[in-house]
Amino acid sequence: MAKILLIEDHENISNGIKAALEAEGYQVDVATTLKMAKEKMNLNPDLVILDWNLPDGQGIDLLNGFRSQGVKTPVIFLTARVELVDKVLGLEMGADDYMTKPFESRELIARIRVRLRERQTDATPVTETAGFLQVGPLTIDRIKHKVTFNGQPIELVKKEFDLLVLLAESPEKVFSRDEILNKVWGYDVYPTTRTVDTHIMLLRQKVHNDLIETVRAVGYRLCRL
Image (cartoon, rainbow, N blue to C red; front, top):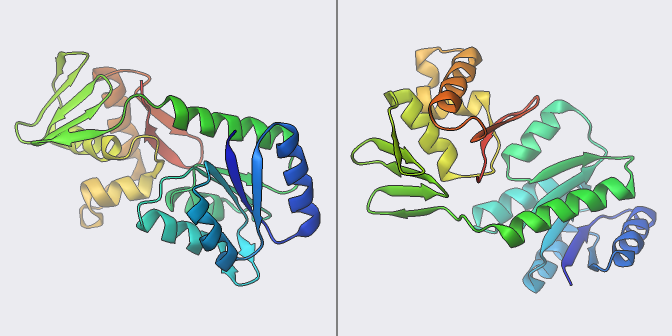
């Protein structure tokens, strides 16, 4: 039975979500403040549903604290904040999904199932030894600047290689175009977001078309094939 930590201070909303999830067989624990949430994380939940605005602070700060401590528990934001900038910030800070209120319980349950399935069936962890970065069939040799996919060598120019390394270091993490520009090109070079799109297209053509997923209105992430 999967354990879910619901961090929500509105009683009616939390009661409704708790009832819906328990009807699906999940074990649900509720926290109404950041302080309670930090304490209940010691129970090692399998997934967290997180509101943004809480009585003693903001959920985004809690999420940032989790990720900076290396906590990889899947987190779904469930919030009334509908602005694109908030969605982008939440995802860039490490949220695995973002839903806005009002919402349908069936959609929330479906997204929970996806996140839990990803966690349970993830058989292709990132491994790095002696300069090698391995993600499923993708192997990157940082030292020799070589890439293979299913054992076949892939020829990449430097920026393509650097971009692929960035994405492969954090599979499933969504990187915004601006974040990619900053980390791969550097803002002092003055490239445009179109530069990122072009290099993504080239990587798909050279490595595998399904390797990199476009997250609409957000950016890109490397998929585990």
